[in-house]
Length: 534
Image (cartoon, rainbow, N blue to C red; front, side, top):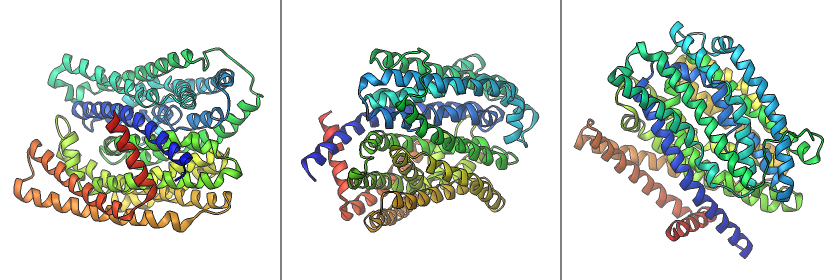
């Protein structure tokens, strides 16, 4: 590694350390929020309705307003190449354009709430349907705030402001937790009764909206202080820099918009299955908590680097950075996925099984968690490759792949839901992500005039084999500890889960160290130095 590479790696690790701490705090609070929802509402009408009502406003917040979303990626890819004084006019113009479009989306949701629920939830009972309609109308303004948040994230990321990007999503979780806490203080144990489902549904909706508004306000204050744009309306849509953002943002946004369509398809097939929609949310959170932390650690520092290496003369360095992103994704996601598969039942029992969340819910969520765990690596690996295309100014390719995947997802849902039920729908999603990643790699190979397939594939195959061995070791440890300690009691479950996880991680760590992958070893050393210094 040259001195330049060493300095870049150190910078990458330093940023990753900041992102890791902030994202961990945010994700822990998000997990507490989901625990509160599970304990108060289980898989009943309030939580199930929320799963359907959240499809459009919630996914807009996650996708458009999320870190590494299309607006964030488009703004970073342009601002990273420009001087700071050029930022404010660009940001204000893009905000004016995006805000106007999303204001129309907000109004449409309010007036079409009935139709939106019926499209994805044809099998819902009348009570759950009524709650979902009210929730959509309450959360509709999140469409507007999602765009504003996404643009702000990109602006702050380009200005090397990482802490706020990673920690501000906890505001949405806090408002929901506070709402549930107030409801619990007023109703006590009666909160789990079905007759209070409507009140619970409204608490979830208003709490989610309040959190989005707070997230935008906090972000806006920092943006103003840095001189990176205000709420001033600008209509300079023909500016070259604005046109460059639009060129990346438009297909990227449409491409990301395919994800709620895919999820809506899943909900359509899941609506006749009792509790399936709420089960998806609970299982998905267990996966997204570590996945969100690690994806931010990897993607936030890499996206500006990809953008700076977009010229043909820099493509050899770009390929090295792509390999780094993929290998870091593999070394983190593959063992975590193996642990999710091997330890799914005790994980769900420890996290969720209390209050209104009973054993039948544990069986459903653990089966879904196994399927989600299988696809963790391809989910993150696909995101790494999509950001490369965005950095190259190509939003069309991910868009075309996403369009194709809508039909592939529907076909796989139809095929797999009959033999496997709700887990089959998650397996369909995993299949779609695998398809996306392979197509992106193939097209990137053509775009960059060849990729070193052997140098990339052999380490990933080795890490995959190591994760399988680690998963088997972890599961064997769990079975052995159950024979000695039994299977009941929170303390016993925690001990078994901790020991089995440590065994699996240790086995994988030994195997990964034996493989001597340079990028992984360098990153681990830099991260260790950063955290020891702190």
